[in-house]
Length: 236
Ligand code: ADP
Ligand code: MG
Ligand code: MG
Image (cartoon, rainbow, N blue to C red):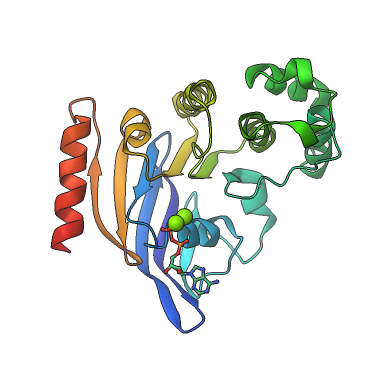
């Protein structure tokens, strides 16, 4: 079934139309990749969908129900990770998770926080202030934070950027585990290799429009995916 549905979403920034009638669905338990050239509007699309920006027009339906502006629904059910991590520099990983856990009224908070810190490999660092953490460590904590309220939908904007190989492998494993347990995941990326490794389907955004979508089954090679991308970008 459909988890999230966008209907004719548009966004104006200044006098520029950045998103043009975006209609797209995210199915339950799928990984959908949104790809496209730099400046296509991917991050604007991300912000409009998660509620960081207000779309100019259009509708968002969650589980078939229209989402109202700034509703708490979104915060509880859609976990998102964009360019801003929303972490507190002067707090430790455990304190950061406690802070958000209280905000989202997470039950059994300390047990869950410690479990997640183990899962992302930060358990040994749980009481250290994060101001000295590397980009990879911060991203691990950002992921733990996003997973804490058990979101049904995960939205990720370029989550692999700046990560070392080990952190990339961990992130991909977490994404796949979540998908396998029924979470719907939308990942924005310009990294074809990661998209190919992860996604069940791709949607191609160019100049604010979805110009094509296609399934990315096991039978689709990385080279074939790239050829499709290049051909669609050229011909539209
Ligand atoms: P992508 O993530 O695909 O690289 P963005 O969503 O960041 O694309 O940007 C899409 C377009 O919107 C770009 O042309 C960019 O210059 C423009 N843009 C982004 N932010 C603003 C803004 N605050 N005001 C005007 N234009 C903007
Ligand atoms: Mg960009
Ligand atoms: Mg972007």
